Length: 187
Image 1 (tube, rainbow, N blue to C red):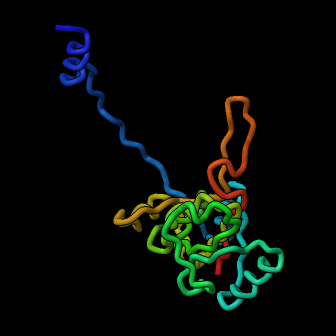
Image 2: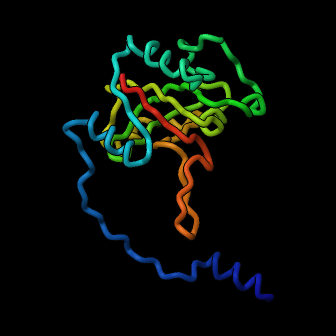
Image 3: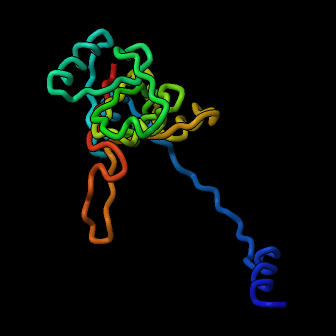
């Protein structure tokens, strides 16, 4: 038997001792003031949350248009240009997108977004500025509650602020893998 076969045989036979897992007793995060907890967690992740009235969404977005901040809306009912993107290469010059969030998580400021709301999932990562519209009544306390909401039938992603990465020299880079800015409108 050669060394490769010997290694595979050990793996197959489970050469490690089985260890009994201990029961972990802990309390899940719960928040009395969900909106404030969500805003604080998102801010800590580098994002920004603004609480607005639903009817003020068009007015708020108009402010961004004045600064040429807005390029495309992927919210079906708010898509003024009726844009349909079928190829990610069409998004190469995109600056800003607006998407709907399904729910937010207070303990970490994450927002669940899925592909049912966009033609192409690349929009979440290719833009410089990501605006997420989120119903403030859809804020959950923790990730345990969040996972109970997921159906795993389509692509989805938790987004918590702008893209961030740090190398081994601990140099923080914003926007390396996604948006430079992430703004959440809580309505």
